[in-house]
Image (cartoon, rainbow, N blue to C red; front, side, top):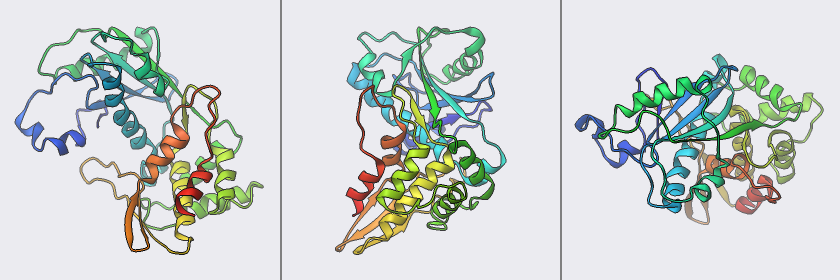
Length: 316
C-alpha cells in the first residue's frame, strides 16, 4: 500500500518490494481490482476519510476480498501507528473509509465487502468532490483508460469508544507520552497510560489479563457493523501493555521492535515483538493482532473473546 496525500508525494510500499524499480521503469500502473495507493480526504466536518479505489473487476468475490484485506489493514495501521511526535503536533480524527469502484463486478460483491462492513451509499458530489478529483488524478497513472465517474460507492463508518475517558485519555497521551518511536522505551507508554487512568479513578491497569481487560472496557467500541476505532496512542499503549505482560513471563525473552519511521515516507512499521522460548525464536505481529481483535468490524450478535484472553493464551 502507498498513500497519496494529495500533494503528489507517493510513499513506497509493498508493490515496490515485489517489483523493485517499478516506478523508475514504468510510467503507468495496471488497473487493478484494488489500487495499490490509497488517499486521505479532508471532510467538511473537520475529520478525515481514507479513500480506496477499484479500477478493474475482480475474478470473483474471493479474489476481491483477498485484494481488499491487506489494503484495508495496511491503511488502518498507517493511521494507528503514527509517531507520537506527529500526533502531538496535529491530529485529525478518522471518520470513515470509502471505496470507489470504477468497474462493475460481474458477481455479487457483498460477501467480499461485508467483512469490512462496507455498505453501498449514494454518491453525493458535494460530499465526495475532493475524493473524485483525487481519483481522477490517480487514474492518470494507469496504463489504460477508465470511466470518468465511479459506478459504485461503498462506505464504512469509523467510531471510537464512547466511554467518557477514552477521548481525554488520548488527549493526555498526546501531551504526556514519550515522543520516541514505539519500542524505544519499553513499557513507558503503557505506564503513562495506566498512571493517567489511575488519576481518573481507574486503578490496576496492569500487564495482566485483568488489567488488559480493564483497559479494553474503556477504549474498545463494541458496536457491530463499523470500524471500532482506537485513537493511535491508545492503540500503541495497549500494544505496549501486552508486551510488558509477555516480558514478565518466566521462560520468555522479549524484545520490542523499535518502530523507527521510514526515512523516505515518515511512516513507522507497526509494533512487533521478538520472543525466545525454550531456544526457539519467533516474531509476534502485535499490531496486526490488536487490529484484527479490537478494531476490525464485528457482526451483530458476534461474541468475541477479550484481547486479554488472547494475550494470556499467547504468552502465559
